[in-house]
Length: 271
Image (cartoon, rainbow, N blue to C red; front, side, top):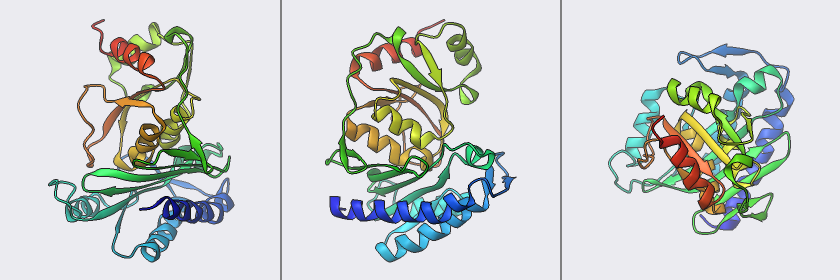
């Protein structure tokens, strides 16, 4: 993929979100899926729209979307060679509406996340926030952008005790969640309800620290590349490389190397 093609894709995602998500915002009902998460007609409409648009954009690349059956998702990963390490071609990974709970409740904090996987790694990513009209994008080896302008994760110049952290407590191991709540090493904490935007907001320096215990491939695929290409830092709670498969992963992130090491040290320290 070229930077020009990535820019074209941003336009495709932007237009689809404005036409499929914004008109339905505060005018749709949600239903519970088998895994306990929420689904709206907007999720399905957006996935269907982008599946058609991407097929026209690049007919040989298949799409793995969140709103597919797990068996179909696994088949697509295997077909693309991502479960064996073989180079079986590219695969789009889409979360058509990241932050469905926010969307269904009328909270204006949600996004669309689209990534291109090839040969077992993320090659391109787009995360679009239609309420703020902010499009984060990255192409491996070419850096990250926000609305077309270069995005570089700023050095905070702060001690960890003065930072703002984005923490999803619900999915953390209970002892760790309790320790963070009792003795937070940061100054202030937020949770915005869209994993894809979490990664991008760290990339933009809006959060200095990030912690999430369980996120799916379509949640983090695009955002993780955007943070990486912007110069941010990421790991998992157990320090193991995040495999690009259907097994959920944790995320430990920070804006600069010093904070990243301090944050990891705190999280891995024996209580």
